[in-house]
Image 1: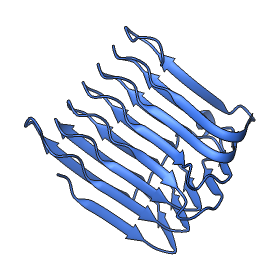
Image 2: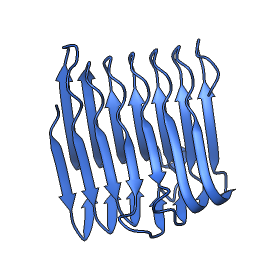
Image 3: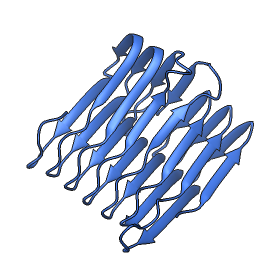
Image 4: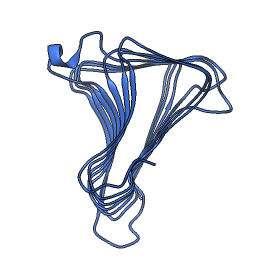
Length: 220
């Protein structure tokens, strides 16, 4: 089983290509799960191509990223991601507040086509495993969630496994500019986007997408 990285701080900032990664590699059947990255801070910022990844190569289940914060900023081509490149299922990304508070996720102020880079929250699998889950908010801490700026939350499957899912759960959810996508480009069934909220607002080009291509079955 992969190792664990735990960071607890008042604020956490990674920038200029800084990396916080776990990697598990095994070809054995029944290989252990990937590592866990747990980040707990009032404000967490990834900027200028900073990367936080829980990755798995081989048969093991992908790693997990757990984020507990009031404000999460991902900018300048940075990534918060889980990746499975073998037979195992992709890992999950959980973003929530420590207590019942509002949650803000901020991406870039400049469009990707103008900056030449895109900032991502991404759960990806490229082989036979099922896609991962990106979960934002929870029924226990269902306060307002604001997602703004030019960036993307993507559950992406490129192999034969079922597509990943995205769950958004808050009392109110407001999205501006950002894109949320459950995408399948292999032969597996497409993933789903589930929104549970008292109100949902999409503006300034914000999108909720399910996408399938190649021989994939329709999105679930």
